[in-house]
Image (cartoon, rainbow, N blue to C red):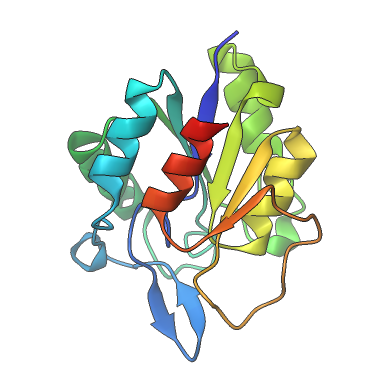
Length: 175
C-alpha cells in the first residue's frame, strides 16, 4: 500500500480568486495561476515518497458557468507543471447528492482503490472546511491551509492548521 497526499486544487495548488472574503475557482484557463509555493512543496512531498493526488470539486460545470473541457485543460496545465500522479474531479453541485463531492470522501476512496493507497497513512491538504471534513471521513490525517476566508470552520479538527502549502508540506513530511 502506498502513502498519498491528497490536494485540493483552488486555494492550494492554484491561487483562489477572492471576492467578498470568499474563495472562487477560476472559470477560464487564463484565470488559473499556480501558487508560488506549489512547485517546491510538491517536489518535497514527492521526494519523501508520496503519491500526489488532486481531489477537487468543480460544481461550476454543473451550474453551466465553466465547460468541462476548460477544467480538463487546467488540469493538463497542472500536470505539465507539477509532479502530480492523478486528478479526481467532482463535477456535481450540492443538490446532486453524489458520493464524490467533498465533504463526502468519495474521490479519496476511489483514488485509494484505484491506486492501492493506505488512507490511514495518507494526508488531505485543503483550504476549506469541505477538504478537512472529506479527509477526516476517509480516515486521513488532515492539514488545513487557513487562508482566512469568510466561511464556516470544518466539523472535524484538522491535525494541522498552517498558512501556506509550503508549511503544509513540511508538516506532512515531519509526520
